Image (cartoon, helix red, strand yellow):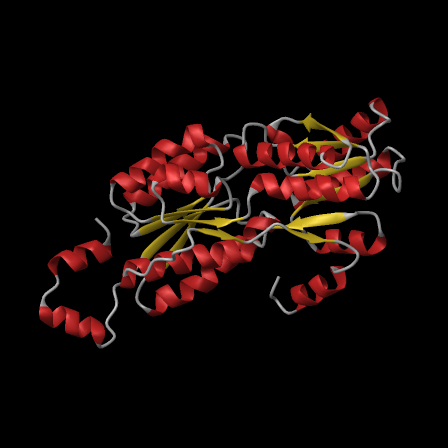
Length: 324
């Protein structure tokens, strides 16, 4: 039973009056996410921590739980969810990366009466299936579709999606969306699937991209599933001697990606606004635990947005201001 539920079930007139005067419960919120040193997940973590300042001011806390690596993503993430339950979480935020491995752990959260928000991966479908309050994030398929459609509209006809975490539902959705997006404007899509150990390994990704392009000279567009992999894909294209003829789009962005878009060596980046994902998810749960506040719009979308040469300067200014 949640703190709010326990409070509502046992409140006396005096306690209700005290709450009306401004007393609140303290919410200990646990957030399951990626590695803290992952460029994208560091922004998600920052958003969660910024929202956590309100929880801390009310006597609560926000605890981040992330895996050491992504080699065994689903089972490791499921174990982190169970750790949050065991450590007395009042509310839990988590991405449904690998449903078959993680859904039983999420179900244990709901069965324990702990409020849950799914974010980043899984969509409203996962939130509905698991009984979560909300889904906060982009729709993975639509994110990939936006990248494929963008490159197809730019005249590219044969694209390949670089998937470095096979089995992760959100990355599979990125690639399916990309292939459908480029097909929607007359192109063809495929998937370059690499072992999970390649995720974050710039050298391995670049070498694989180089080899794939040399073996498949008809490819003129590529899509990557994360900012680090996008940088490596750009490098692999250069190593294959294909800079300028093979354009790349990818999920998320960093300083290098923004510079590449400025320089024309990358066509676009798909922004899912990781900071907002962490911030909104924690804020929703803190308000629910303390006040019973719910958000009627259960699917809260933070993307996809396309960053390209037309708006990259504005995005850079946002980064400088700490808003992106």
